[in-house]
Each structure stands twice: as C-alpha cells, then as structure tokens.
Length: 207
Image (cartoon, helix red, strand yellow):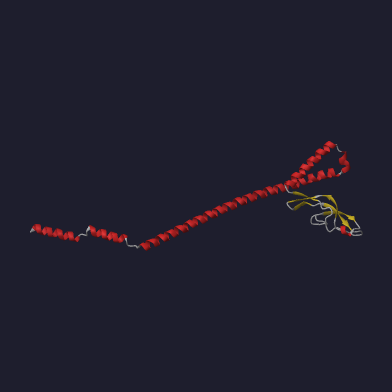
C-alpha cells in the first residue's frame, strides 16, 4: 500500500507541473503576435525615418558647402578690392609725374635745345610709364572741341569767337585730365569759347 500510494502521489504531482510542450506552444504564439502586414508597416515607418534623416544630413552638407563657397568668394572679392584700392592710390600719386613730363616736353622751344640722345631717352621712359598706367586702367581726358562740362572740366579762361557753333565748347586744353575705372581722378584744365561781349561764356567751373 505504501508503494502504491507513493506512485499515486508522484503521478498527481507530475500532472500539476506544466509540460515543456506547452511552453513551446506558448513561445511560438508570442513570436507570431504581429501579422506580416503590421511588420511591413513598421519597416516602412523606419525606412521613412531613415530617408528623412538622410535628407537632413544632405541638406546640412549642401548648406555647409554653399557657405564655404560664399566665404571663399567674399574673401576673393575683398582681396581684389584691396588690390584695386591700392592700385588706384598708386596711380593717382603718379599722375603729377605724368604732368611734369608733359610740361617739360610741351615747351617745344626749350625741349628742342636739349641733347637729342637725352631727349630720346626721356621720351622713351615717358612712353613706358604711360603704357603701364594705361594697362592698369588709367585713361587720358583730352576734351578739346567737346562741349564744356563743369562736372568734368575746370575752366580757367575764355577764347572769344564769332562762330556760334563753338560757343561753350573747349577751345584749349591747358592740362589734360585723367580717369581711372570710369571715375575722374583729375579734371582737365581748359579754356572755353565764348561769344563776343559775354561776361562769362563758361558755366561755373567744377573744382
């Protein structure tokens, strides 16, 4: 009797324990708790998030690239502006040298008395200086025969004429003017044609 009772108790105890087969079935049911459609939807959501993140990185990289290009361009523009300003200042300081050459060579009688070889050398140097400055943007203003413009020309006298077509035009250029980059850096000094008996044929001169 004791042996049979023991077997009955063991059998009863075994029945109260969950079997390993039952555990496997429960695990498999848990792993299949989402449907294929739901898993695809989740993957699509993750893919969309990745695409958005990639777009943000790309946008950031493109902005950084554009900012760098703009910075390089600004740096180049600033450098060119510094060079241009320095050139303008230097050329403006050389204009009086040109005028000195012109005054010396403009005195025809005195210039012809100078030794021919020395005169030829000075004229060659003058020509080199003029060509170099012209290559850097210097332009000569020689308004003889043009209408007098007080914004550009400086009138220092008048020349009386009976020809009405010449009234208020430049009769003589006493000294040439110079422009750099389209801007006048020295006004030409001129005499203006005036009609007989006029108090002042030239408008107010621009200084």
